[in-house]
Image (cartoon, rainbow, N blue to C red):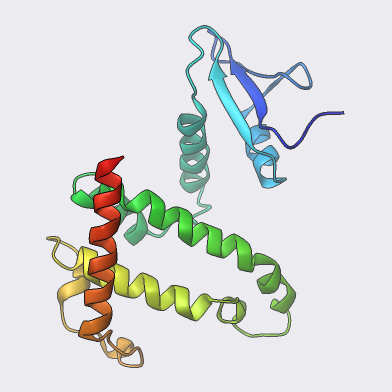
Length: 187
């Protein structure tokens, strides 16, 4: 029986074929995506060099699903990701995304529980409103000064129901980010 607590090791041969070391057979990208959907962590390494290729293959899986019309990532998110590679935000974005997905995973069971009983199941997810407000304030505070990002213009009509963060909240977030940046630069 395979140990599912450690990552499933996939080796990439020189022929670019992917080999599952647990079942001793070749696998495809779709097979790897299936392992991940089933909750299994994977690690993909180059057989010859030993280089970790996991990130490269996970990005390829995402790109293939997006190109097939299985759009999960909105254009705005993709655009902001590209922008983050050319700004000082590059060091903050990974932690922000990780924290957002962690909150999503934590609330997933509650969301599934309410799926059939509540018209908007995302709104019932524990911490959803706080997460939405935090993300909105974060994006306004950090992206507002970047050229091409629409966070500095006047509010749209449909944004009128969302209260604007006050100056104290923004100042507190800026202080926290400055502290985080200091810690990161020390690392």
